[in-house]
Image (cartoon, rainbow, N blue to C red; front, top):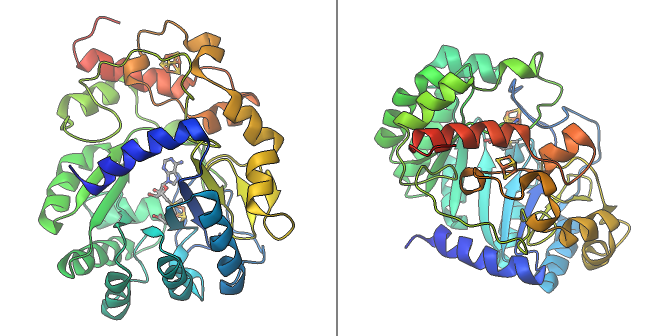
Length: 345
Ligand SMILES: C[S@@+](CC[C@H](N)C(=O)[O-])C[C@H]1O[C@@H](n2cnc3c(N)ncnc32)[C@H](O)[C@@H]1O
Ligand code: SF4
Ligand code: SF4
């Protein structure tokens, strides 16, 4: 049993009690890449929180029951106090995970990262070739830097996961991406689900896989891991919350704004003005999300695809302005997944 699957079990239990077990901290919104698919709204001039702010926030998160901090961004290593913030998180006994594009990782800070003992460092890899990866990040040389960071970290004994959103532009590279991950000694997380992209994206409709590509994806995908599994047998529990946002998961922006999750653009309060627990317990949007169960989502009741579905409430909110519609992209992906598993849907 892996550390993360144990964590997954704990996450399910905390959903019921509304304990924010996992917090996603976007320490900066600045970035040194311009990925075409990125869900973030783009660069801003927001003032970013400093170590002294995080010292207070971490104390409040501990009191609320948080155990895992994901340090992300933008590109988190661009925060001038990134290592001090990460060290503070470890001092406060949080487990930490780092999301990075790897561009700033070198031998010296690899040692610093190793000494933080993160549960994993997730690097984003979009292709197995420089031209395809660099055209997605819009930064020449980024493929070389990201793959070499992954290698350096893995060789130092840091658990490395490569994250690959599977899109029209990198779909054909998947077999080579899988081999590359194996060579590096990294786990690979591949997902065809794309959140609505932000300002770097010229044509969002061209990013997602076609139905034909999705069928191809599921027919070649190893079924042993990942969110999208061919073999599933889940029955809908109408009393269960549809997702972790506001139940055991929360996101904090670089200026202290609190969000239901990193993809949900609606702020529900700011930690420079109110305490975390005041926001967590009292923000109307968080309360509304917490009151929702699968039984409230009429469009999904009796859905035969439920077993294969990864419905995202942030995407539903972005496309409909509400919380209770079906998620059209999740429906399309679930249908392809079920068909590949030989289900008659
Ligand atoms: C927003 S980035 C932040 C951390 C870091 N800059 C990086 O790229 O890994 C976190 C992850 O979200 C993924 N991501 C960004 N936009 C996405 C989208 N529209 N759909 C799915 N995943 C997305 C990125 O590829 C990356 O793996
Ligand atoms: S996905 Fe790309 S553009 Fe978005 S934050 Fe990560 S590196 Fe920056
Ligand atoms: S596949 Fe679509 S309709 Fe079915 S449960 Fe998921 S979002 Fe709802």
